[in-house]
Amino acid sequence: MAAIVSVEDREKVIQACIEAKKYSYSPYSKFAVGAAFLAEDGQLIKGANIENASYGGTICAERTGIVKAVSEGVTRFRALAVVTNVPSSISPCGMCRQVLREFCANDMPIYLVPGDYPRPLKENERPEDGFIEGGVRLTNLGELLPDSFGPEQLELPRRQ
Ligand code: THU
Image (cartoon, rainbow, N blue to C red; front, side, top):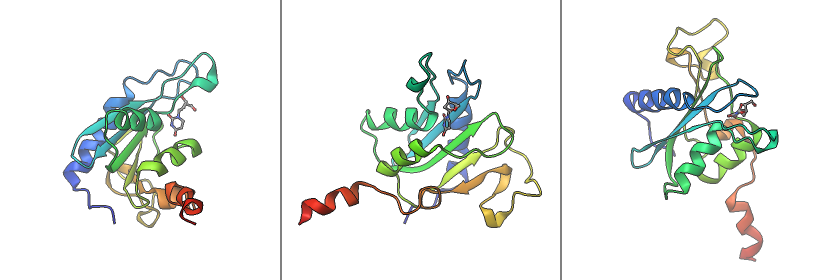
């Protein structure tokens, strides 16, 4: 079970993802994304999307953040927040979901933050769909990447 994230820590990781977006390098898509991880030890690690003239070289904000963290020895996380300039919550791409799966628990909170955070919930943003205050959608990997493949599965044939 993921530890409960306090309202204070949630606000910290949300503000960190908004700061991270400032350094997005997205001259091609003009779609700026910021991500921030709250590590188990309380550290905040930020990432932005970094595009490339050879488009396939682009790295998403979530992967920038997790690769920064893991390459500095930080591998355990309590929460992730992601924001774009779109005034609604935008969900991580498939490749990022799989990369997150390597290090994040299925029930770790993922906050999808609208570009105009904080704001009241819109009519179609229902609490039963995970919407919480500020217009944020709270989700997790269990929801975003159900029935997933991860390190545990890779171990199975080696155990025989
Ligand atoms: N992008 C992210 O940073 N995260 C996602 O989960 C979705 C897409 C970036 C990649 C690219 O720079 C831009 O958004 C448009 O695809």
